Amino acid sequence: MSPRERPKIAEGISRRRFMRALWAAAPLLGGRGVWWPSGGPGAPKPLWRADRRRGPDPSTEAMDESGSMARALDAVETDPAIAGRPLVRYPEKTDLILLTSRPPQLETPKRYFAHAITPNEAFFVRYHILPIPTTVDLATWRLKLGGVVDKPLELSMDDLKTKFAKVSVVAVNQCSGNGRSRFAPRVFGGQWGDGAMGNAAWTGARLRDILTAAGVKPRAVEVAFNGLDEPAQPSVPDFVKSLTVGRIMDDPDVLVAYEMNGQPLPMLNGFPARLIVPGWFSTYWVKNLSEIIVLDHEFDGFWVKTAYRIPDTPCGCVEPASKPTRTVPINRMNVKSVIASPADGTHARVGDALKFEGVAFDGGYGVTGVFVSSDGGATWQAAQLGRDLGRYSFREWSFGLKTQRPGSLRLMVRAVNRVGESQPTEPLWNPAGYLRNVVDHVDVQVM
Amino acid sequence: MNHRASHVTLSFALLVAVSLGARAAEKSIKLPDDNAMAQLKPGPNVDVVRANCFDCHSTDYIVRQPASDAKKWEAEVQKMIKVYGAPISEADAKAIVEYLATAYGENGGKSRQ
Image (cartoon, rainbow over all chains, first blue to last red; front, side):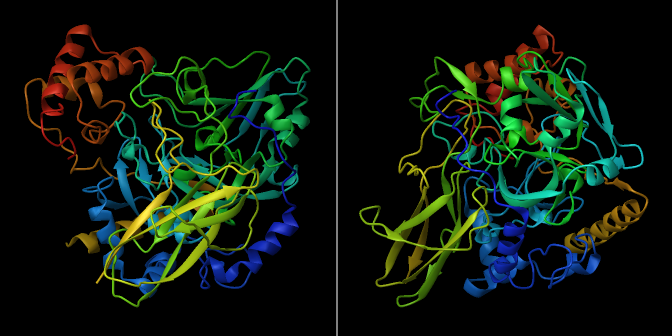
């Protein structure tokens, strides 16, 4: 086991318990409903309803309390990481920050991270190859499972929904390269700001139940996953990822999800089904899933063997601008916290009561504390934590502060998880631009 | 048509398409065109870049990268060929590196847009 790959701590919370937690978290989710599970109060309207789309964006409402929408957009303009990048509206999506058009990479504006649940329409998008699927017919779509199994399967959506227990987990999905544009020295790759992440309630069938139904042969070692996206040229490697059989069978929260926040998945987030690997970076969460192959050997495909690898050191980092001697596939997420509001560069007056808020998360131990500093890190005070939606979820935090004197006020935030892991005050570096989790900060100009 | 109105119209058309699709157990979306703002800077060999690079990705994959010297661009182009399987000839690869190191070089000003 690599230093970064850690054993599981505990079983996931039961469906009933987390649904209860979600209900209880209603006020935290924005009152009017960033999202509601079907049958609940609020508005269980389909996300694609025109009136829903024209209605006020819940995150905009949140901004209206502390500032204005214009101020939020100003942050997009002034943040050097995303300056000059247009807001675009893709199918089933609200305005997101465009990173690349084809294959599409769309980034979630940071203000959304004031809330634990990221709305489907605001959830980031990242594809590797093209063409990507733009049409899926459930009448013909099948999830094929083959390889070293007793009984190969071809599952329809009905099969997935009726032949296996329906379970849910709230989990963060974060791109390995989130924050890459802030690396110094800079590195090639998708130049993400902070928005290549999101948190949702994922519902579907347990992958281990599906594998058990097929009967995994004892000599099976790894399982490979393919989606409907295809390479543009025969020489380009198809996007296929793998997990060990143990990773799947030991973890009841690894799912084949067909619902995201109580709705079918948006096409660009993996309709009709995607893999959910709680605690691990998005690269394993194969979208538009179509094929599962059980292997009797280690998978040697490009996207595991060559790409998405981190230095084999305890921090996953090396000296800036140096090369690692050994690498391992990226896996569990490290501890991270962000400040969603107020935006960096916000203006305030002396005596203003400011409310700082954001989310914190880790790779599945669970965040136990969030601390803020307004004196450059000399002293840290505990922030108030929001409702616990499970150990893989964003945890909301907030902190009230009255401005004392004119000048620049820097607020820093750091989270601590259940095993005492936290975040570095200086950024860590690796050649691919992964694992960024340096202490976040915003500067407020007090006048 | 102003920008906002065109957005609303486009969104509505897409929403109708998605809603109709959902009823027929089929979901279908139409992707927007490539980002018109992400134009390659003019320069020698830009046509070679156009001929070789955009089967697999749009121009913004280039214009958003950090400004880099010829050595780094060479490594990146070789990565596209050897690792990502881009079928680019040796002569074209050389021309592409020359273009990138000039238009998006460390001394070539800002690389974005």
